[in-house]
Image (tube, rainbow, N blue to C red; front, side, top):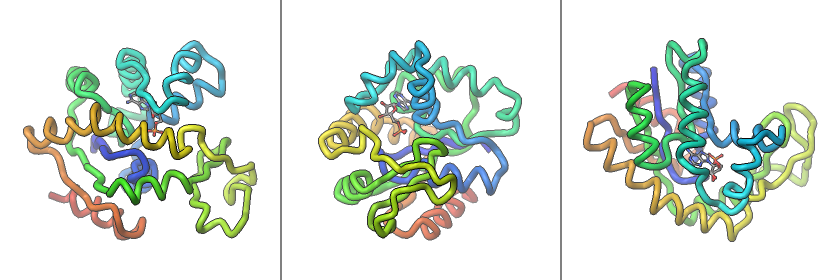
Length: 207
Ligand code: AMP
């Protein structure tokens, strides 16, 4: 199963990708996670990516395309994968077509208001990537899974969220039409609970 998870920031791409990893036993390829790791490790790619990410802008196409091309060549991707956060531009989608045959695109749909609420309250573990929402943390400041301190991502601050939404609408949303045209796109309403939304994703994949 080769799946693309499409949707605005905060729609739940990471959460649903992790669930699908368990369902289908294929890896999650998150360009955001790969770039953040590169930043932590202070690699050349990390240095290039940091300014863009902190400002809510997209990292240049050629950088992410090369990352994904190499990653999809690895052994664990041969039976499928969940692409989380890639492609994000038409150029990326066109290039992806040259080295991957996608079975389905799940378009996670959520209102701007809900996105801002989710992202501004999101707290993440800087070590294992665990994700939480302040409204459910009851003041706790450490990751349930590994005990590390939870942080707010620099790009989850309200000003940057608005910029990311704008970037999404201008650069990424055109992918919806792009994939609709070739009949592999499924819209999934993501305003429910994680479990409800996950069920809806699985239903869409059966089609
Ligand atoms: P995410 O964790 O998917 O929200 O990604 C965080 C940030 O990483 C984005 O706001 C972009 O700056 C960068 N990024 C992730 N994936 C891509 C991509 N496919 N193309 C360009 N930039 C990306």
